[in-house]
Image (spheres, rainbow, N blue to C red):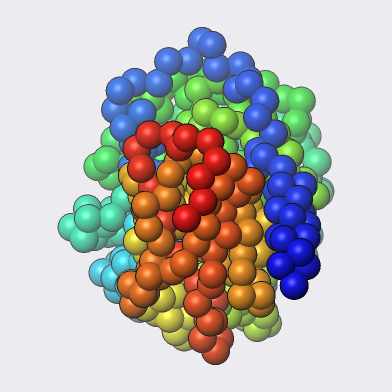
Length: 455
Ligand code: FHN
């Protein structure tokens, strides 16, 4: 019996060590020699990593058609046709206070909202062009201003998504891979688009809305070989607000001047989405973005909502991979957030009020993630998140620090364990019905453990 048990444990250990290869390809960080982040920026990175959970919001005039944020492209509309949409955009139910309160109730610590998407339509009061919410809609107000004020009032950071790709501006020329004939002239001034139009709007966003947590760029993939004037643009952002993090969703390895590496619909390094890089920075904070149904912008026909349990597991797995989770909702054109999102976010928030200690402020733990679960760590605590494991014992590969004790996060009951040079074996508490995560808290000593010791 003993022999069987030790053979089983050995197998398990081997399996964990084989399956659990290093989270991220530990390649040296690429191309950052010239960029020295400021002390404010480094501090903001730490705070960003501590925050762990953010709300992504895709909201624009496209929501009027209820077919997602790509409707301009998907229906191959002309610029002239699309320009009718703002006339129907009148979000009289928009209430910044309740949006921010919803994010907070979900346990989210920051909000990243589309200041403009690929339609180029500015959802803020821009003087650079009249293609914006104040000038073109019956609403006539600046919701980002209201949101910024409310975020600052409620103590939550605001980040702006900014699409570099533009399906509306003629100066976005030569066109990119997503282009169709939408009535723009076959000419345009690329440099003016970048240096006057885009930089002008970024300057507005970074001077008129108080402290901004980050600029979340998207769309460079549309013209992969273009010169996007990144060096100047990034330098300007850091000059205007040194703590603002630059988060580019270009799906490539990080470039100089960038502060966060983000992965769309993916855990860092996994590339299950098929378009992300597998190279994970070992220097920059990491982020994984995903949707609460299958759409980014409001999609009236998309009922494929993730359950709170699925979101909770995504959150735990992201944290185990040393990453934040940025979870998206697409508000409706009247400014309301649909009930299906609200109820799920409340449920996740309730769960975070019990399990948040094992997520907020943590970094990826000492045991590489695997099918059974992940680990996170903070100070002298290692949190073992048991997501999928039915057996009573869980064997982990060696942990360098001496474990002083182990207990359940919820309820605090002590958990039996053995630790020796081959690894750690935990005697797991029984899983309660429908539990997403059993979290075992290991309190570890500051110093590295002496070899071979069992208790
Ligand atoms: O095309 C966009 C899409 O609409 C959405 O904004 C996502 C969010 O990560 N990013 C782009 C695709 O990479």
